[in-house]
Length: 565
Image (cartoon, rainbow, N blue to C red):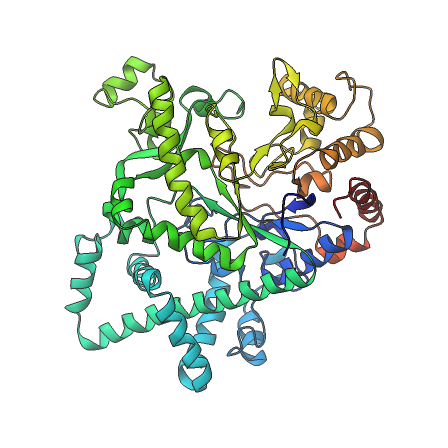
């Protein structure tokens, strides 16, 4: 696909789990994505942006996956002959034991959805093992050989999880399982029948990944046919409790947790305002990775570019330096009420700080820039012709954005955050090599800001009015917008301003596109709705809604007017 920044395009950001397909099993999947691609193409969008699709852990966060390379099995569309080994009778028999109507209502019930899809995949694998033709078996063997560098360790890790109540917390497993070396010895010492059972389960998890890669490559080809690019997402960090850390422990620093510095913008989260965001991701031992020619990073990029036409690196600032905590996130509540001296006493003098160095001196800035450029060049070399986007939001050192541009990496523009000398930067002054959007999955939708500011006062109403005033200025309004009608005046103006900007890609969050108030994630919280909230309507229902049809006609006109179609 031609994704040159010379041609401006527009896209929609939607979490896959949030989509409602015509025949989904309680969660958005590749089938629902196919329907969404059709809808987006009809409107005039040229891009669909997704969150990471790697296999999730117990917290269901796509940014805390148990594997940086394995695909999340619940993203698969499962039905009769999908995969080919699953018959209609077997599919119907499994579904007969489930209240599918209830499962499809409300948010994602991960426990039930995972159980259902696991049963269907296990049935398909049993059929595959018993009667697959030589062509199918040969295809599976080839996949396992091609992906051996990560697949074998991942499949064994998943077996070990099963041995430990599906818990990925490897440091709480029995001693015989707590390292790859010990676990291999444990496996070797098992009776032959138990070793065979373990091997069969490893083959099952490998089979699931084979099916996943087939479906995702097919959806990439389908998107191309519709003239729509798919944007993937690589989180900078990887979960502490992941197959990657378990198998390559010497490449990670495990006694520090990566995150982001204190950020006053997050009014919902007292801890973030005081100490920062503690994501719990282990730090990288870049020297060890360099000695291995950055093999693991190469695998990550290779995996994502096979499925997506371009990809975003979440927290690209981490390549330059990352904020590190001397405690794991589960201890955040203990540190929240402490002052700095109390914190230092609790941590034996170790304080949160930037690693490998801060940006307090020109020498440090130059060294951080040099490091970041080296690591990003590794990513870009493996990416080849695949375009790379860098999520460069938050506390951004002066050297980062010029360096990203010099490397050909597009950065982000959040209009209400692009303020210099107390002036909102006009959209026609944006660098072409940039992605403009008002919100991401972590932010309040525009309609929610509007409600807080003018309809239902809350503790954060003043902040919401402040943000909306800056958006108003960006869209050419007087910042005093309390008398403006949202639907008739504000919504069309802000969408048009975003599309008219000079940014290469203009992205609209699905909630902003539909003018909805719900959120998919509230950072720094353990809200039950995090990563479970689904769209209120399926794509067919959106198509049949007169109100949505009228809104999408407006969007289409604005896309054509701004020459992004």
